[in-house]
Image 1 (cartoon, one colour):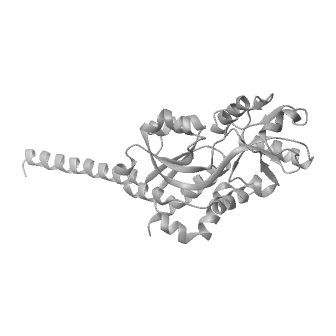
Image 2 (image 1 turned 30 degrees about the horizontal axis):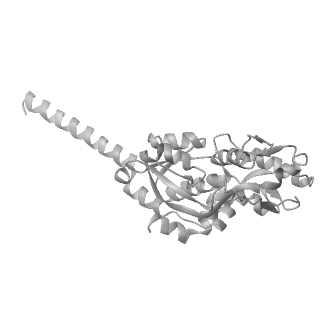
Image 3 (image 1 turned 90 degrees about the vertical axis):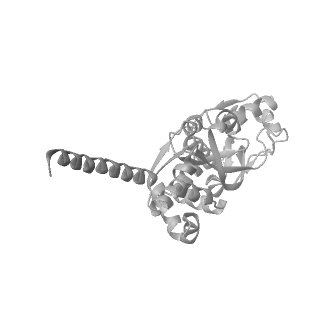
Amino acid sequence: MNDKMKVLAISAIFIIGIVGVGCLDAIDDEMTASIGYVTWDGEVASTNVMKQVLEQAGYDVEIIAVDAGPLYQGLAQGQFDFTTSAWLPHTHGHYMEQYGDDFEEVSTNLEGCKIGLVVPQYVEIDSIEELNDHKDQFDGQIIGIEPGAGIMSASEDAIDAYDLDYELVASSSAGMAAELRTAVQNEEWIVVTGWSPHWKFDRWDLKYLDDPEGSYGDAEYVATLARAGLQEDKPELYDIISRFYWEQDDIQEVMMNIEDGMSPEDAAALWVEENQDTVNEWIGE
């Protein structure tokens, strides 16, 4: 073989190597998944369960915790593949109006959800309309969660609609639960922003205040959203997340195990182990 032929042969091997590596990278990328989520109890549960499910299906999974606003902005910009954290049509409706054209609503993963103002059963009122008459007993405060959450916007609307002389106190999901825990232990009056499913309804005897003005909307559903192009880029991943659906009892079980001290990873793994038939259906086996 002359020198010219040797050079051509070596060049061909080099090119084939580059193409081969490129193909492997493409295959590897197809078996990755990134999930954006808000650190609310239900979304922590669903995200960790989906992480376990996708890992069982052979994916390398990254979960990314963000606030509600950045969740929708990040999905619109393709910063992660999907989320199971969209509360619709009311709670996150304004985010859908702003960003909804830039991603896809894949499917409903949970139904019969609710948001509103929540008090312990021993509190002797039943409607938001009665709050002003008992301002002193509630210290003039509604204990909320993160400022960007949809339920906080709905609560601001409720304050206006009912002309409430109350301060909406921003906190976090964990902070709200801690305030509720202390109040219930001392049988004090407290009103918090609440949603279900949530483990607090299993832990304590609580009730929603009636909302005759409809500030918190009707029953909601939780949706799975995917970045634009996911179905074309990773069709098997898209198919799995499109089949993800569970009942309130399922998510409550995971949340309660986390509340009782299990790590989110262990609580998710336990649920997956005990519900393998459902997991197989999601995976498509």
